[in-house]
Image (cartoon, rainbow, N blue to C red; front, top):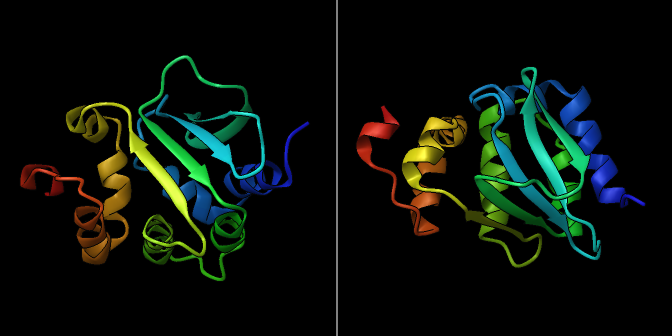
Length: 146
């Protein structure tokens, strides 16, 4: 049985305009592994027909891994904003947070991450997002930021 956090995130990506905007830069088929605090299941977040879709089960192949705390799910997927820049910065804030943590791991090369649209997605957060990514130790070549 899927967790409450899964249902919240699923609804966010399926129904919200901000969820659609956040997925727009991703290439069709871009795939992430998603796990939630306290939930033994593993989920797949994949761009399908122009939208990110969250479904049960672990993908065979993914470019990125996410683990979300319960506090982060509440903070991110019930946002008081429809501004993609603020949303991306909230996600990055959680990556640095101990109170509402999100863990992220790139499972592919930075070049493939760029090809699949993950860097373009992070660029939605503006200069603050790029600076935060650098704090996380992810080095993005300047040519990918243009």
